Amino acid sequence: MSSICDQSFGGDDRRFWVLLSERIAGQRVPFTGSLALTHRCNLGCVHCYAREDGERPSAELPTQRWLEILADIQEAGCLFLLLTGGEPLLRGDFAEIYSFARKKGFLVTLFTNATLVDDRLLGLFRELPPRLVEVSLYGADAGMHDRITGVPGSFAEVLRGIEALRAAGIVVGLKSVLMTENIDGFPAIENLARSLGLRFRFDAAIFPRLAGDRRPLGLRVPAERAVALEMADPHRLEEWRGFYEAFRGSAGGNGLYDCGSGVNTFHVDSQGVLYPCLMVKSVAHPLAHGGFREGWAAAFNDFRKGQMAPGLPCRGCDKKLLCGYCPGFFEMENGADDRPSEYLCAIGRSRMEKLATLHLEDQ
Amino acid sequence: MRPGVIFRRKESVADRRIAGESFLIPVCGAPVDMENIFVLNPLGDFIWKRLDGKRTLAAIVADIVAEFDVEVGQADADFNEFVAQLADRGLVEEVE
Image 1: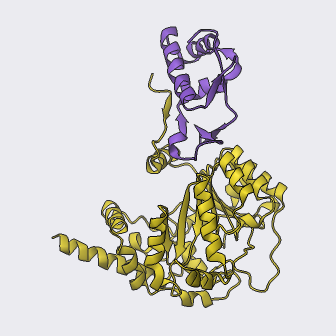
Image 2: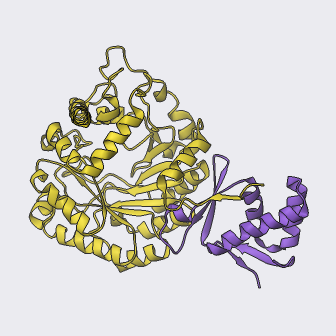
Image 3: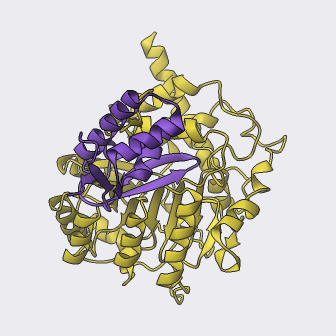
């Protein structure tokens, strides 16, 4: 008989994902989910798609409903759980929801701005550690960060929160959004993350607000500059090169969706509406009208069957592996999942050019 | 291990069944990373469910023999190896 306890994974996330993928291959299991516990936030970031300017915050699910949803998604097979917002720590019942989730055996990641980290939260995390707390940081100094968040003093509060989390032994990562407001200081943000010994990732994706305001798009950094900055890091460059070499020529079929959206992922917003992922909003199932299983089983059946229209430029595009192809992105930017984003096209072209240049240099 | 020894699962670990696979997920204590997550094969899962603080080693080994068609010596060795791993990771405790 072989080993009974197949393995632990030696801290290797990738091995775990490979094993999980192999074992659930072909099965539609919602093992990755995100819950936006609130859309409220104590910051007012210029680029935020979820910001609700001047409007009454929308109604949020009460504690008990979140606990019921957690029980439902646990039973359905969710393992990796993201708690996000808005700022989830604004909820007075965050500790109750979080404790329930951890005790149910979810591997929890928290997205937060870290300004509300306090002793109570640290005590909770010491007892029931999250897998990762990922903190948003938009500048390497108060001037830049606070200008983007719109809240004076928020930079100092973020650093205080990060330090408190680290001191408590919590695994912390930093994430940022590259935008016109911070591109000049972006290397300093990366240096700050490095000096703190924290993993760092960023994205240049900026979307219109959910309420329709398209002004945030004006904050996008031109794709060429975004890619140049991304590829300036040798580690990221090697990752892209390795990824492209490994998967080139296998850009998938003609299905409009070729990701895990609605297959292995889902998202629930603060009002309890179930979506196939964080990005796709056109396919929705209010959980008030039934349980998670019903929504998962019925509501997401059709949208995955959609095919790329013959005229869609993404069809057969050799840059599809590099652009970040995502019909959800198209929908958030252009209101329809089959209306491609020019910005993503430009990102794909720039990455391809960079990799082609490297290829020539290698030769 | 003595035939009469009894183990129980700690409350600090959650067992999850996902798509027919059994995972042991730590809830308390050390930071959650993949180092501390186990995937059980059917025999591991079979034993894990019986570590209830009531059944003795001998009783569980007898169950294994009945269910998996193996010799007592092999079942005993498998049980000992598995429970030792769990104990090392702090996932089970011996009942006094």
